[in-house]
Length: 76
Image 1 (cartoon, helix red, strand yellow):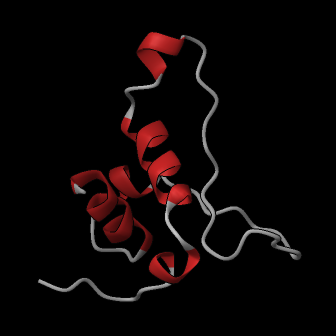
Image 2: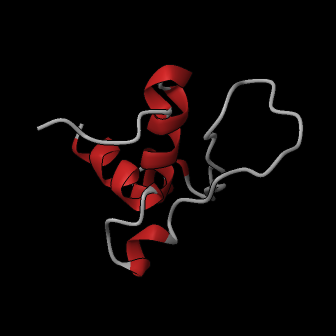
């Protein structure tokens, strides 16, 4: 949940730039899987690279249903 909160804030400009650059939206004219799909970086080593925030955050965000990814504000 904490990682997904950081991803949400990064996509909405609520965190510093050095965190925002970890998450990149895929730009595509035809989007078969919905909106707000992030580019998942390729990792060279399975055991080491899978723990990076850029990898974990993007994979978790993409696994969310489209209606949740389209929410524009966090509830407290």
